[in-house]
Image (tube, rainbow, N blue to C red; front, side, top):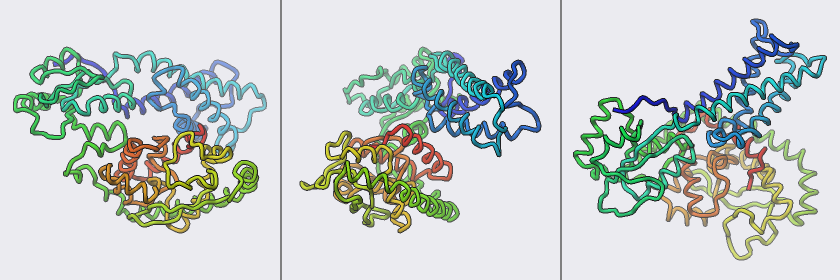
Length: 461
């Protein structure tokens, strides 16, 4: 039916980037040790542990510096600084862990060779990826079938996640709706098979609130495609797999089909592991807070001029209220006229408060909330009762985020920067519900690594 075309899913692209990164770096280092006077890192049966440590560092710091972000990896100018930082930090950590890596070389030129070998391997593969894999010949061409109302939003959401995911058009299942999407061309249902051939479509996504809008003839065409092995996905499934969030605004009364929330929420072993981790983190956080306390006291005295701490009532697990503790970052009378959304470039934030927020140091006192059992390290950010009441009235399923303990950091916090509008709150809710649905040890680890990226790149509010 269609021409043979190679295309990659998001997960396949990320795996490809990681695996070939490792392959190119090891190949370049092997070539350096074979053909040049480079003997700091050699590949042999006796030194296999050196390779494992290097692979771990490449994967970890590559994630921290976002070289596996598909948007950043699609252009050389956006990926170059991140690749450079990754290579530099990998070399630094490799040199500083001689218990697991080679001892420091006598000749410092060996360190330069090591750095250039890693950097060269990463850059060479990135150049190939951008030139070949990230080119139109490997795009995944997709056709939407549904109503026009949310088509532009769907197109922009998918494009933001994967620049190589190309929606070539949509078939309107609701002829009475005259809305014309701006981002994609509209086609007739009778042209389904012709579009698939002409546009070399490899996947169809059905995005419709009401399945009865799919006419018998269109249903038969879709069934024929399915029988021939053609990829046909339901929109909410594809959206969740690609964006790592749940489209709550698109779900109806059968929401329970999409929320198997009891997956790890009732897993005693997982919950115990989380409790242990929370306690260890909270104790270490308190020690870090004590170490930074002189700096914070001085900064508060000069830049804040007022109480060091502030507490505020928030909504926690199952809707229970608790008092959150933070270092104060706003002027003393910030809410003399009532509760106001925090926003980007908020004028109420003091000079020192901006530093505390961007460095996330203002969050350290919340370790006391973890020790008290009000919060966890990872979970939805706790919101104020006034805002919860307002948002629950306009956003479906908003109070579902209170199914678990709120967290200092979370999936929404590392994916979305600001939340000063209803639209921003809706976006954060989608990420929060995805986390509640899929939370696991590996997703928690992913959140922690991305939080480190947030701190390093000063993305705090």
